[in-house]
Image (cartoon, rainbow, N blue to C red; front, side, top):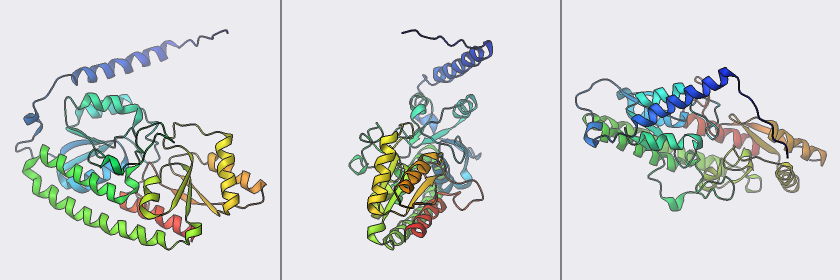
Length: 324
């Protein structure tokens, strides 16, 4: 079989070389072990420079840290964290951070090695780290990962994330421990109320129609926690390709069970669900797009989903309105 060699332009080669040099420089700096005591502040009144990955993590760090933190999020609204690649600018931000928070469980799949190296030089915390593994959903069947990383869709899991953020901030900045404890307590009270609100609203959907069909299998924790069947066209990671068999299988389920609505996601192109809808229509069953859900990303600033709590509430209200 003939193989074709693709030649890169001088500009492309230079760009690749620069990217490698930047990564090596930062990774090399990360080889130095830091005395844990040096990670704690002492009398520094400037906000802690915190870098986060997803918008949901930025939000929980801001809620718990308050005025004591300056949060820089790497991923903008609408960005898919499964496929995200760190830019040179991101690497510079991570190198300048005092603390780094990320989701873990391979949500940020292409950045995992970066976080492992950063752990050697500064506190780098996965907000999922304190979750009981026995309560995590398996990702082996649908996404190729050990666990499903979409932990935030069970609000109880996000309470654990808030506690993990609180404890990391206290360890790094013990002078403001009381502030972090108070902020976390107030935020967790709001999350407790949100958890009960979602449970009540989903229970109002007739049981036979309580089926959530989305572009990828991101809502499994939501389904388990709030008693709604969840089906996704793609697996847990959007890096997994879907094919005609997946479309046909989901189409047939919609037709056989007379499911009236499916949902698109803000961080995933709509063409996948449009193919399912078209297939159902050819079989004489009308399916509508019930609305846009926020799965791996929150909404734009100023939208009704620009905080974690608002995102969960938006998703729940959209689902209930379409399926009730």
